[in-house]
Length: 547
Image (cartoon, rainbow, N blue to C red; front, side, top):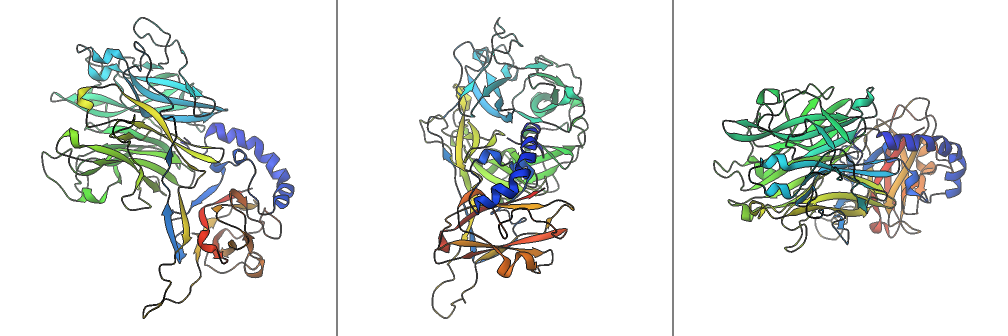
């Protein structure tokens, strides 16, 4: 997961490589021709502008092309992290309402856990949820280190992080690393779903925590729990029912939280919708909220007594911040009058402004729930865990079967679904207009043109392509245009670049050079599909790097 605009660990890692890469760019890229970068780990997607094929803000203009989304595959051997042994803090539930960060070669996971103590009826139910921690060197094999920070059933040999206040019930957490934070004690930030009472009804709201190391956490607003695991209503913002921590991210200097609730906003929607709040400093949260995402069916009100029924959006949006665009996963709630009929899949959304999200494919299921009998049967949960590892993209997810939750079975785990690296969806040649008859369309070029891209003065620009299906009879002609669409003579027409080799980060070369100097302040990229086998071409993304 890459939660801030320039995640600290990766920024440090690749800033050290940047100087080396810039020195060898003139040598390495021309020698490579149009070949892909040999080692994908040397390519830092957080330092580039990414133009995904399905992003119709970044790529608004196209002709004779269609978008085809890709559904990830669940990794064999899932779940990659399971519940603990009897007596451990997560023996009853490993619930991936959590986050994953990659820092200095280590993968770090925060999740919420429940142990056998959850079955003690005298104990408040929410108080038995704990924040737990795990580590991995490869993102697949996870360990639960003995942190020695929290006593659980008479022992400190466990993987629970320290929370102050300690007895606060926490159901959902999201964690980010904040490299722009000047106070080392606030380097890590956590948003948590906590509880308060209103007229004898337990409601949810937001609590925020900070940490120097991600293991010892302090609540930002000092609050003493009441009744062992609840907070006072006057400490909350807003003092209404809100289930936060579906997603936490920083965007253009502001902090955003995404969650779910069903209370009326500027217009009513049915059931759970993704709703967001923002803060300039992670302390003061504006009481006004925004609707992040609403599914089409939610525009029809089903009426009182049907809060579980109908198509809804579950638990906000978990976000992968790619610098200029946010990719998001949201729950696709398939409702029913009774819990036994409710199921949940995962959907896919994106945003270019940090607030409003949309689907690149209408009502499309990104990841389906497992079949009955599988560990992820009935329903999936979106943790905030996304990583590019080698030639694959990993999407981490959790499981919760809403049909049987009232029976209190042991549940959960963390699974991985994979895609070829950054290939969430493709632009392909569309031949639906090809044929004969009175409405036969003329043969038109298959091409797209991007939105205007800013070029930083004094810096060179380098362009990379993520595409498949290229070869001697299937090529992509790349031309550069001015902001108003006029061809730039040095980079268009007879001087256009041609790419004929597939790859995840193929450098685009003009006359053997990767670094482009002297581009206007804003430019566009035009990509044309050519060759007898152009229908086999799949364009997944373009990358633009400054410097």
